[in-house]
Image (cartoon, rainbow, N blue to C red; front, side, top):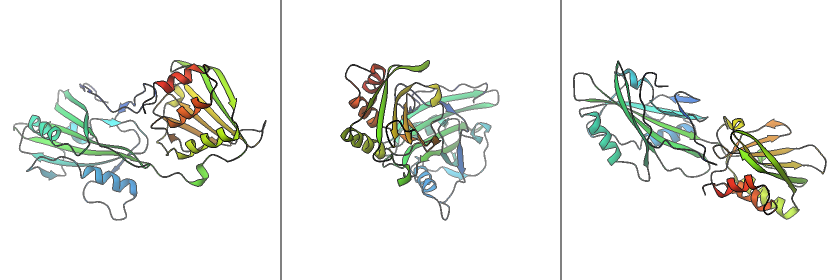
Length: 308
């Protein structure tokens, strides 16, 4: 938190299912890796973080340093509240003003990147400003890639102290043991009303035939893993998919879609498993396709408003 400070967001990156954004907080689930060269034996998540840091736009003549001068730059001004975050950073001294450095950063974005947030912070001990740049991601493992630039004037000079953080999330691939079971009975439930302010109501449940079940299972099994679905219990349930070994048997596998960051919460025999991430709403659309026409309108409305 920026106590006694001002931070003006101009478009912090959102993770969406239905009009839901991630809170921006400082220090939530952050794994910090020392700056410098890539560590020997670095894991794939660490390599990804260092690759993103290597794309940072640094003004010519900037000098690398390990000493923090401004207390504002002891930690990043802005950190996304998402599980599994890795943060790698470097510090620089630049013989230019903060305004010049910020202009340089915004004029030299990595290919496909865009500015998602800018702001200022102030307190009796000094000021700082920041720019957050979102980088494109690809493949099932890359969930988040952004560069957070924080700038502070060096007292008594026209120079700038610059901190650059690569903030990334790398997700492991799903194992065969995390896939939905084959055969048995598959039931899908949608809801007539969904609201973040209260529990979903008006459940509409259908039992799928073998063709429908096979198609839905394929979509579910194609989803990548996601970060911890924090806070989803506070949002509305959009749909529920239950797999049973036979009619009337207890659930062996369940997938619940929530109106929060594209999260699909999975349980197997009552044990919570790693959540899935439905970025393009493919599973939500597949659920709507098997629901009776003109029913479960809360789930249908969520599907219509979901970004694809």
